Length: 226
Ligand code: DC
Image (cartoon, rainbow, N blue to C red; front, side, top):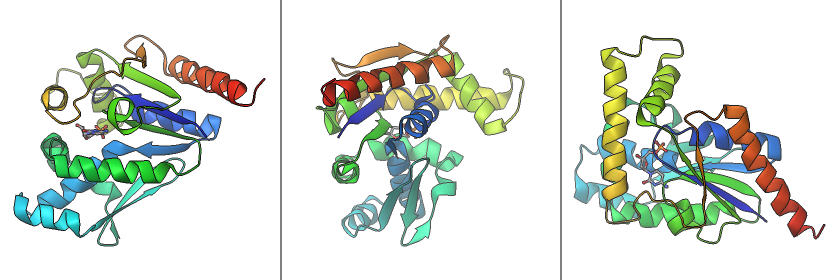
């Protein structure tokens, strides 16, 4: 069994990298951000009523399913995966992710989800808090401008002038989330001491995927004693 984790700030390419590695190296893929986003959909539906929200957390109304390529989220049995990247969710998710009750529940679910299979999971605190004993830890970074550019392209699905108002909005949201995620008391975004840092600002996507796969192959060779 092998657990590979990727942590890093918003928009550093964690999801696309982890998905590509999962596919090519035959690992299960777990997107912990999708879980925080799922809780945020519920928080928004309850109109930010914290008492009702904490009751709902106890009732376990959210359910997560981890396919090889995608992490799916269900609320009261209805799939909400499509809503996870809505602007209302982007704007609130760091607030929800700073709540200890939410973090405890998600940490528990994540540890349960890995089971006995080889998996790659991505988030903010996976190498530091959730899986401190992971076989491989990576920390992906990139310049803020570059991360905003990628997120914006992903949203627009095409080339858009990068000085548009929309681009500024994306950049500000990333900046704000990074600041809340890094300064919160509970499990802040932080590089684990034993994580390998990959700055993807100028590293090609294929190269960063290859770097991680090479490391996985080395662990596999070691585990099988060759
Ligand atoms: O990776 P993402 O952008 O989908 O994550 C959404 C938010 O969830 C992010 O701003 C912080 C929070 N998060 C977290 O606090 N811990 C994790 N392990 C994953 C995400």
